[in-house]
Image 1: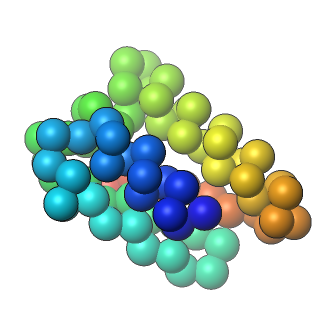
Image 2 (image 1 turned 180 degrees about the vertical axis):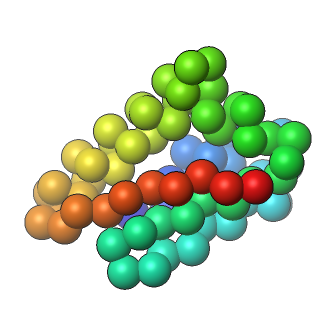
Length: 72
């Protein structure tokens, strides 16, 4: 699931080298460059909501519950 979020985020941002996904148990923290936070969140949070929906589908298949947090 870490790879899934990393792949999606790298496709969205201008600085893909600055994308970092930290896995801490059932929590994933996505860190991107300050300039790219808006691109990852999207208008009214639509992109972030879509990423969380994909993550939920993947985690359900793995019988886990994983939460996503987006930071700078």
